[in-house]
Image (cartoon, rainbow, N blue to C red; front, side):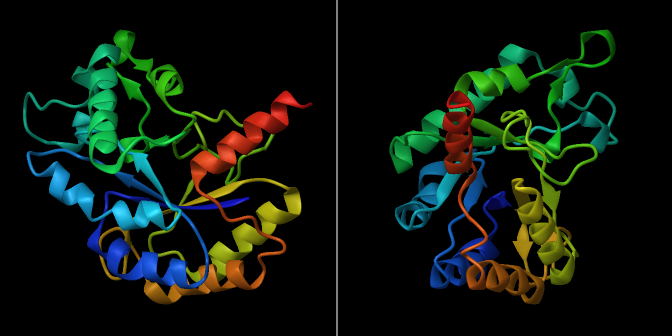
Length: 237
């Protein structure tokens, strides 16, 4: 399986990625952070994306990452949060997503900055169990492998492949290797085009054209859909 995932609701996703995917009949997962007083208006533009069969995923409310990213003394971040704090954040985000976009049968979560712990030192602990409580899957980054085993991967700590500045030949090669092994690969995109975390439109097209031209060998589906399929597969064996 292949999942195409997109973080942070970038404008280039709406203007470039989604039309290109829709034209080829490919569905992906778009992870949004519904923070701010204008969240309803910002989420409303994603209604058509949901209606087209894409998944709208939860990316937390405030996109809190490690405070190590902030050089200011006394900065707050995941190190200063508790499990209760992070649970409130993701539940509040879920409430807003449902309020504007309506309920869904299943949703996946994306860990901001791929980071899965709160606290620090002796108090540091994983919040993966919190995500497992509320979502069918959680997309992290992984530390070694590119792929997710259909039988053994932790569905709430899934490995993914960031694609910024990655050439299409490398993306296609990884997809082919995953297919040969019978594994699930999750690609991560932010901006489609020139940007700090950008994937060029040329390279993005190279990947999705290959997937569309070989749909007999690649099942391209949103994260939640693949996770539900694997849950059933595991229960049957």
